[in-house]
Length: 294
Image (cartoon, rainbow, N blue to C red; front, side, top):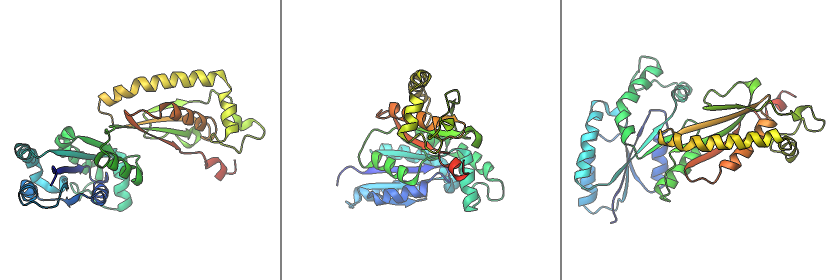
């Protein structure tokens, strides 16, 4: 048997730990969720001393462990003394996202069964802070699709690729539909000429070459993109060093259909291919005008 791969999967309730455990099981991990913490080292002894065929173990630990949660740190020291190499995966999400997920499932928070969800989230963050501080991998699932989480886990635990602690989302939007609540950086590109008023262009979007050519023909567009690229490439390594996990760059025009989509696409191209961070693009409002007959 090769060296045991031992992963502790933890994180905020509602951040996707159960989903991650199912994915890791599909990857060949022997998964146990909510194992009583005093049995942790017994499990390691069993797998290492009795020549089992288990080479990959994922253990789910969270706030349900109650008072035993405080013994985890000492148990990790025991694993180190036994020369067991372990990794900690911490799944997180923004508070407003966690609250929304709880409301959708109509569940109460395990640490606040008779109180508001936000009280439980506040307590849980305090209880799990020491695990997050020691985590090898922190994945913020606030904006991740299920398939994107699966891809990230496979990259870490199957393909053994370098973990990208920061995930950057380039997001186009329309100001008339509201500024994205989770945006870290908001850029207003309404200073550029609007193709909405050009005959033959209104129905098209920034994903169409005609709109792209129109928006990109202006010198102001090129200067803006160069300055924005320079700013973002300066900020990203500083955000990484500060431990930031999610960066949402929102680019807005009036309706989120023409200028913002074009510039979001262009910024995405300029940021793509860097191994220091993950990257995705979203066009939040690109189809909303069409639905309204505009």
